[in-house]
Length: 193
Image 1 (cartoon, rainbow, N blue to C red):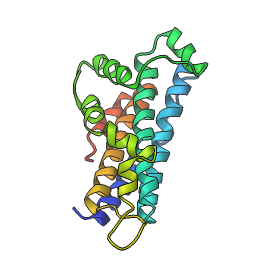
Image 2: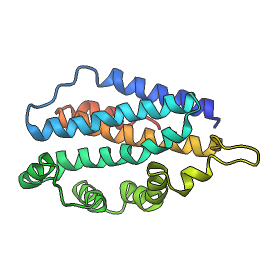
Image 3: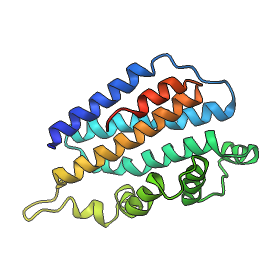
Image 4: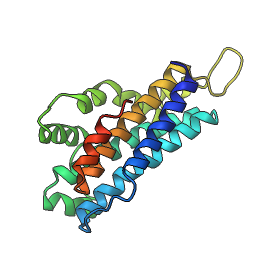
């Protein structure tokens, strides 16, 4: 697959999801609103990642991957797993759970521990942190033999788009479930990424 094809596929996936989930309404509880807000921002980050890659601002796109993943997991955790006390801790910005714990709790809830989310965390967490926090991976991808500037391979860019697509699909399914529209959630879950 070429980068051009990956960008087109990413744009089309977002469009199909937006069309399918158009007009979905959410419950008015704090839990629902906060969950939906985090998951909605995944949609924004997905779009930003695609646009940044299209504009050859790839380092900034890569820096958004970690927060995209974190918002997806935190939004699902708030919706599916958080106790009322944990919800209050989150609202006070004092949640004392490590991200790995949130991943494990979400996977345990869906009855699939050790699957896609924890595999993604195990495999990609280090690189996501390096890109988000100006680490070695971010720096080295700006060095070529003759200049300093963006130097990200097409394969790496396609990988970032694919991961953003995965996050978008997961939260879109969860947002439809949160809205009580399991019919739409099941439909979106079938979309190819």
